Length: 160
Image (cartoon, rainbow, N blue to C red; front, side, top):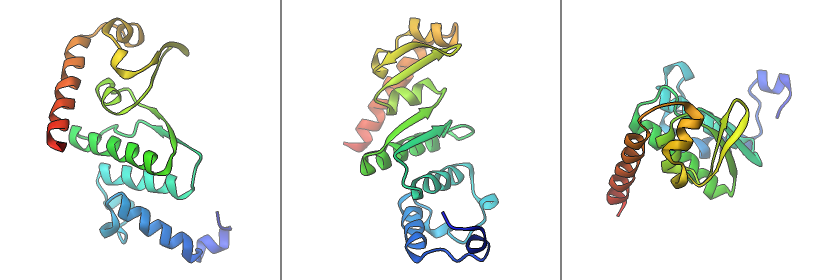
């Protein structure tokens, strides 16, 4: 939130610079502070985006497809990071995500829309195949739900 000339001349308040470095450290990128964005991987770019959003000290975090084009492991890391940061800052987030498995693993509430109408509003564990079919169309939702349960158990075993 600095004027054009201060921004152009890179004359930022020291408190903002300190906070930027603290956030880069928190998202695991403090060692990449001198890199250009085009030198970063997709997951690293997502982390920079999260830090950029958080430095503005929002009251609500709006996140659009945070895991698009990321591999499964990095996708879980990014979702876990978003959840941790929101918990640390007591910050609510609205996450637009089409990956049902990730949503079921990480969010507390799912709102499913079809043609702009709310089809489902509730906990992720109650998101059953018939509701998913109503939202997205025909698919083998049982396999998706089983994969989420297996991933959840594997992650809980790794944490324990």
